[in-house]
Length: 378
Image (cartoon, rainbow, N blue to C red; front, side, top):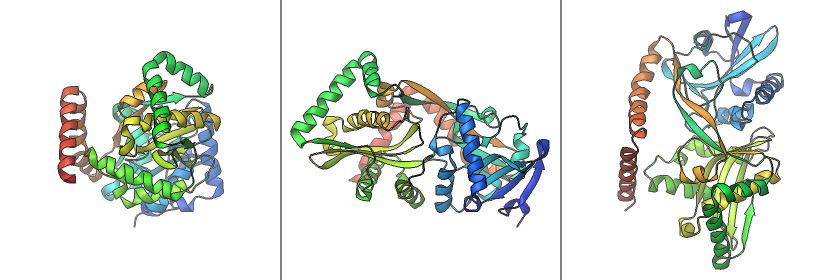
């Protein structure tokens, strides 16, 4: 076992006297965790989104279900000045923590450290650091991004009523139709009840069943078929940390759940993660109703922003008021991991980009996936 494979060891001294120490999440003490939170508060104050995915609690949770998670702790003059959480695979391949499900990624650093990206990777024993939702403004890694994407957001910082007034101007037909469907749902299915923070584990299990079925219907890989993701969501649902708490929101009609969403919140931002609904109620657009009630509930809870996440979807275009930017790519330095990364990731990424840039071809691909999914379920 090399030094950089040994949690807790000092791997190297890099630029400007910064020492790098590798730890497992479980090895982080209150000193490190409080330092991480303080640095993150400074980044948010400087304009970074207050994403719960960037808080230490998310890395701690992933570390409990992914034993390969490590955190590079950067020290200077006895003070923790940076943290880079990552998952390490064979050949020195590193991935952002929770890559594939985390919607905001990167390092938490004090300003002005003067780091050289490849030196940091070498100190971590990495040939590659891969990301798919890198936070904008991450100076160490953004130059290596292959693509950038919009992440639509809803601003309710002035209250839900102000947001609804904006929708009446920007999307009057959608708002009118959605509210009318909500009233019709109440008449035909029973009294509408919305719970912003539902703690019942059975409601979470129902959402996960709906979401798995939705993945299969649309020909996408079922994330909840991966036990580590399912267990991560269950653990986060039970958490109540101020910086990274699981929030399950459920829309009921006549006492029956018809739509639900599980996401993560910080003090001021709700990261929208896993929304779904009962297809039996599709004609009422329960997903749209749910998102309006989530915006109302978030505003009442002191949350100013709902991050809808990367990806094109009609409801996001209709509901959003602004956007963040996220990036996909990898920092690569010479080594066997670089070749493995290229073989495993780059051809697929380039193919996806080719299709995405051609809307007609992308639409055909979606129809083909949907057709295959229907064949599988027969």
